[in-house]
Length: 504
Image: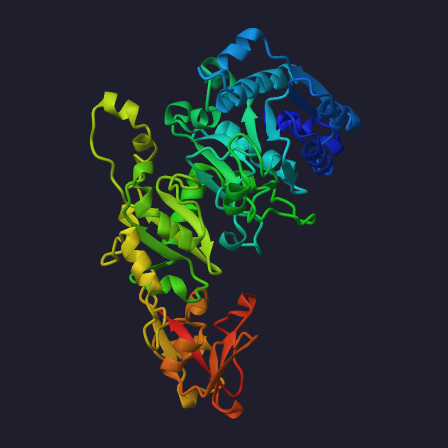
């Protein structure tokens, strides 16, 4: 239905209707709409602004931007429901009521739409914000393991995403919110039990999601600008929102096959392949040195909020949320740390408990599959406690340290070309040892520390070339490190260079 709907839309409106929730911030609302209406696929005729109340300055902005307008007028009964015993307004209850009303009105306003996109009045948007939802909608609709698509990454900070690749899509079993697509079929499913308070935690409840995943881009497609709100202040925004790195590249386009990549079978197959070709960390210092190969960390930590103190210092070192469920799927976090990819896998196994007790501790249910990936842990690889790992990361690096390959049982022999092999490629060097070169392992040995273990380097500098990493005696016994990953090659050679090779 989503694909048929998009195909039926005019060329300039290849998107879903948007419902924008707003209350009392006309300036931010104007900025948000200005950004939204520049997004490809957005037309004002398919934007519904739902105003909580009747503040005239807010209404004027909606009129100025010429979007559709609906106002939620609070009744005496509504007022009673959101008023606490001390006479104060319960912000969580008021927001939940506004959300329930807005979602219902959006589907009524656009009766033919199979999905809507939900935003608030303090966002900025990527040029491809709507195209992301259009790209993944067919899979969200047909894959029984999915239910929501979100443009937001809780851990999408500048330092924690791959800014060179805007196409990576991840899954999480915790609802991110903050710019998300809701299918009409899912609204029919969840609207019957819409909560009176804390709507976002209702969406994160495994009984609501039925343990289905949300898909989201590693590099977010929107940015949260609001520094003041019911559950927001300047300090919180600075810590968790101000550093978010959202896409601003207007030239980026999603692959027409991206909907296939996020299907659960393809997604998990790709994940397992990554596990098998990664470095599985044995000591904390490995996380502190350069690596162009993903690093896998196996750890164990009770994810209950009461245990956050045990993991918060480590998460702060990585620069991501200390709440373990944010951005994770079945205990797995994928993020970037110091320009290298880290796969952080929790092996915590929830204790057995009665069904009634589980109802009171639903966070256990969300983590019921944390041991799913344990069979991919190579023999001899440790499972860290967070504080032990952090302690190791803070220690001085060992002398002459190098990342010795440990690719889930793959035996890689680091081989230095002899003097007689000067000018030869790694393919030739490895064949001389009755082995073969595998170029995907070149980044692992592409550092000065490793080169110095095999050559008498008097100096080591960065360069660019398919014959690197190498040792060149004609240049004063220099070691050269390749600074451009696109040049890594087993076939590269230079007449005066002795190559360092990953042979198998």
